[in-house]
Image (cartoon, rainbow, N blue to C red; front, side):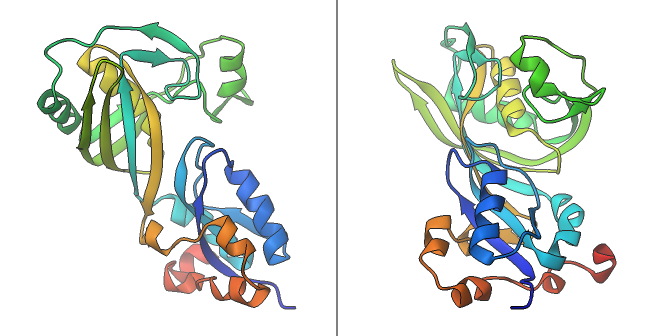
Length: 243
């Protein structure tokens, strides 16, 4: 059998790492030459661009494209990982002045060019060591700010009950944006703190979640049907990016 080549769009389930997906695809597609174009945290679901064979050369080009996510920020708590996977470090009261309108306005104010400090719980390496290793030991390491661009940050849902105060959102952002840091900063800007309680990637560049397939669906297919899901990389990536 000739080596498989192309782009495969996966709708990743919660609790799967991006590495887990790649490992699974190696078995289903019978090739070890597989990568991806942009990591999703285990907590996140949605679009993972899997690159097969010669398409792996397009990784950097595809990762540089803008992303669109939907998700939820829960207010009144600060976690050490800035998402629901971490330990709660602070609990704060929700101010009476915090409304759907004020949250929407705070999101709008965060659009545009800006600098973001990456979270400690990340794979960024400083002096050869991933930040998350220091974070697990309770250490804080100075990180350089990164330039990012937020094209859109919109409120899509609002929950304000005795049990929970949360905002659903849709964000379009540049490469390198940490959405959990965006959630953390939004909570800080509003006062009560907040963490990312849900995240789903729905688009990356020209690719949409509607065109993705779940791993369970792939497992139910024949080898021929799986190969038929592969899209030619030349359709989406200029030849110069494949050299």
